[in-house]
Image 1: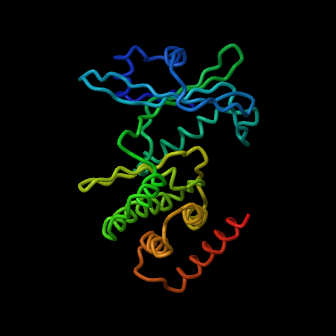
Image 2 (image 1 turned 30 degrees about the vertical axis):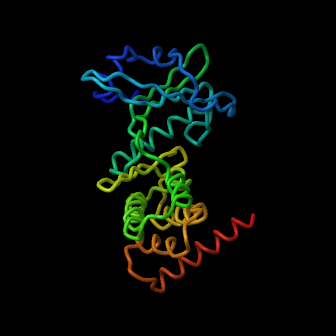
Length: 258
């Protein structure tokens, strides 16, 4: 896959003297998360705050990996796992599904080692839906109107994803980032490495619906059902919706017992 560097970020990286693979690779930063040692190599992420040409700062996450590969039918000898992730980030971007904002991507072969860099803009001001619900459980839930507002936003993003036959595969509250205030509500979806294109919309939707239902800790049964109806765009459960809802609940119970 070719390098990816949009013009806006090219200017910012140049301003910070980080406009090459080697400069980004050699940048000395603390690990935001300890490197993942598997797949025959390693992969780690750091945070960097870049100076903007017009003043101010922009936070970015710089993910670097070496010999951290996955094998596919088309890549039997292995490819960087970041390739799948950037492809999905760009797929979401093309479909206007709010996700991570890509800053830079490139792969290099260096003395026999496969190295890759993937940079994305930090989601400053956002928090995982999981953390938001935990805070509500501790400090008190907002009124029904604001819960409805949030559920409508998440359901809309999820439906748009499935309209494009995209299955996230890990659609958990910790991967749904929210920026919420009285005047603003924004959603971003992260962790796109495992996302897949499915043949039919229903194949994309079922796994994500049950995964969210299973991991929606703290949600009441009423809120879960209300979210499901918002996703379907219906006011009540008709015969088709009842069959799907029962399948989701049945699978959630079975997986929870395991």
